[in-house]
Image 1 (tube, rainbow, N blue to C red):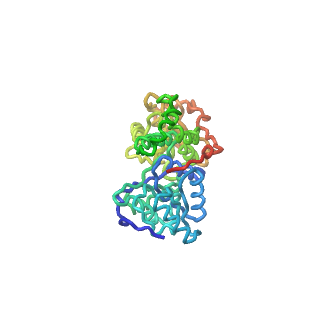
Image 2 (tube, rainbow, N blue to C red; image 1 turned 135 degrees about the horizontal axis):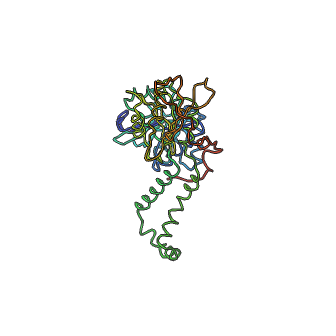
Image 3 (cartoon, rainbow, N blue to C red; image 1 turned 90 degrees about the vertical axis):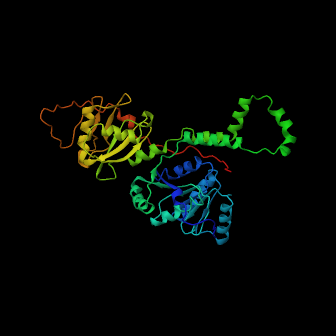
Length: 395
């Protein structure tokens, strides 16, 4: 089966490329959240195996999406049927293997989602080229683990574009987006006066006891309550992913990974964190690696040759950020150090550099501890990534 329309391989400038950091445990929940925060999504989700393709499609259908699978285990009649439904937009999300999707050309796809990166890097270009056509904007998304991040570099060379690291949407963000999408949908709904006129008097009589505010609340809640219920107490998948990925040293052997006690709630962003690091005068042209900003804390990487200088500079300068004392800590010591962490607090914590000699006249700093209780940062294991399932049909 083949759908042909529009010009192939045109519109690559209209495609933005994003990646989300996930673990195997959070990969599907992250995919679902990407779909949930894009109410009008019309996408192909690429998987590497037939079994994986069917499992993802089944999960999406169970969660209320108009989805289906396209893979080699289907008969030609079944494939033709799935393709026709997708072409008519009776299917929102088509989950497919690379082989089964060959020859599939649809101009108005909003997203291409790589559930996993393809084995052959050039296949990523074939996948992403299916969106952003006919002058439309498109988004190509890759769900990757931290260890897979290096695989993006050769893809970026081919695309001559950079991937943008994007946070997995939170439950609150999804609920807000869906609420205002519902309001827009109500506002733009065309009313068939002739068809509904017969029933209006009975409707008015039934609802006359409700105030304007009560009527709006009840009407919105009919569809919106399912989202509120589903995402109530839902965890931040970015925190779960970062905690699992951050156990141990940086995956880049030339970098040292640091913890810092500032996050989004402190109005910290990558630019401000880089500025804070530079203010400590650690050294000329110190290379800063990856940065992960979370709600209440963050991680950053520094050239390992400046590991000691970084700790020393924060100890001596005792910086503050928006009136808050800054604490940094190396996430994990070298293997031979017994597993202890080296840490420093701008509120008077201690510093002990590895193989670092004191300069003449340099004072020793008393080791008063990190200042922040280790229990506050202890990883909490979550028995379930997402709260119970719900049934919901999407238009």
